[in-house]
Length: 191
Image (cartoon, rainbow, N blue to C red; front, side, top):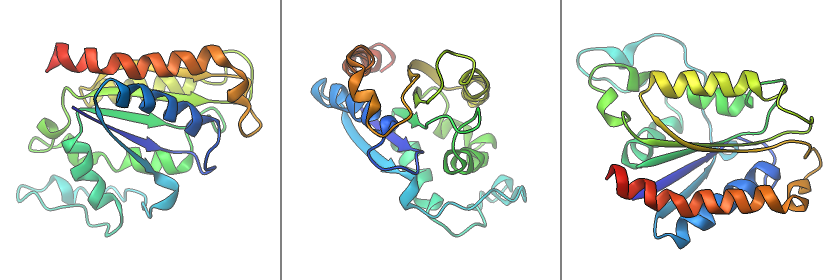
């Protein structure tokens, strides 16, 4: 079983990346194949809504960028991990551009390539309490439901603005690691 993490933070080794690495460490220990892809290093253009990827001939997206390689990685993964800090009560622009390009999975031929996969969400943000993250969680929940993905778990860390602040929160770090360990059990049940 393979889990692929898509890192949506523009800040390398920040709080979201630290939490994600904890999940992936647990997944590795549980025997899963793991890959981590920092979206900040890729060229992912916005969807232009042309629907060429919906044509009967199954043409790929007209945008010639790094997303072309990611479609195959998504299809080959059993579990997708979306990691993004909260920016203005939503995900980062890089994560949103990535999500917007999931349109090929909406067409009849594309849906079986993603349908039923497991999904994990990891997020960290500066504000305290759930209010700041709720709009983003709703967006992800609706997107995952629409794509017929199975939500396995979430790691949410609030009150962690400065880089590395999540390292001072052992409870959420432990939760992230344990979620990663549990992914093998999820994979066994659905596999």
